[in-house]
Amino acid sequence: MIAVQVVDSAKRLKQFIELPFRLYADDPLWIAPLRSDMKRMLSARHNPFFREAEIEHFLAVDDRGQVQGRISVSIHAAYNERFGDEHVFFGFFEVAPDPAVAEALFEAVGNWARVRGKSRLLGPYSYTSTQDAALLLENIDGRAPTLLQTYNPLWYADTLKQLGFELAFTFSTYGVTAEQYKVRRKANRSDRVMPGSQFSVRTATRADLRGNLDEIRCLFNSAFAENYEVAPISAASFKFQIDSVKTFIDLEGIKLIELEGRAVAFFLILPDLNQILDKLKGSLGLFDLFKLGHYKRSVEGAVIALIGADPTVQGSGLGRLIGEEIVRYAEPRFSRVDTMWIDDRNPSSYVLARNLGMRRTKRYGVFGLDLVEPSL
Image 1 (cartoon, rainbow, N blue to C red):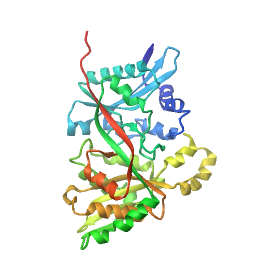
Image 2: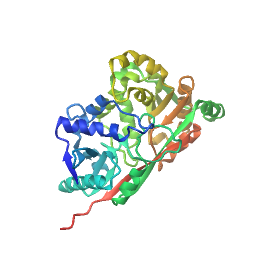
Image 3: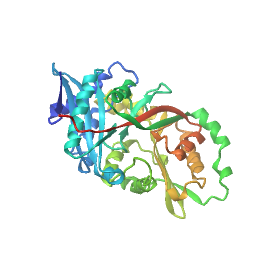
Image 4: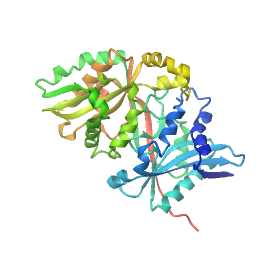
């Protein structure tokens, strides 16, 4: 028997956070998040997104009292305003390999959604489409995930399909080694392909960082206003996400491309903090604090965390300039660069990745289910 419980106490919240540590204990590719970061993410008091969405969390518990699964459910008003009021997201999805666990969780999620007049489940999104997204479908390069890439057993997708979910769309991630992008840079210099360009490039300043990179947030919202699945990010939620990595941000890794003094494109590159998290195993101890500087210097990879361009200037050679600037920054600093997810329906981002010499490393899927009223 599987019982589903609402996460409504400190004890159950701890169980929610701890479950993946048990499920992935023998998986060398899983990167444990910091428990303290997870606690803040799941906290209505700390995470401002709880003021923008209706959110609930559930646990699936067996008859011995052991947690066998978890899931979140959220209604993001800004997303529904743009894409239809029927949507409910599920996320933070983790289950033991027992079909009854997932079935019980989604029965609870479906009932929660129907009570609120919603008719379509979509996910996994934790808690929305601009945060941790999608299930891993193919681990093409066989490597552990980088920062901002999700990870799960490949059988999760089959579990969802058995419950009636259909694949709604796919994402991919891409990566390139230093040797590969050095060769690419020689063959693809922007000053050769963009004679007379009116674009200028500037590095983000400390003032930009103190302002929580709000110009980048606004440009991101503008760049993705007509794109699939992306709802605008509020200033409070963007600050919350930036604050979690602010210690590790290198301003040289944030570039704004301007045209006639107006920012029209940007990218944000972060060190692959998963290489640090892999050492910490979920907790930051006193000795780890002393070693933090060494950990930071030991990071060999980088991740293109955000990238965007105003639709009015796309197709003007801007992608080649962005690619050149990414390589110019990364080449002397990192032995590898990876992307976060790129929607497979977004040809401009795919072309940029290919122009950088990147190869597909992982493939992800988002799943949807139209809810029907339970029969009496």
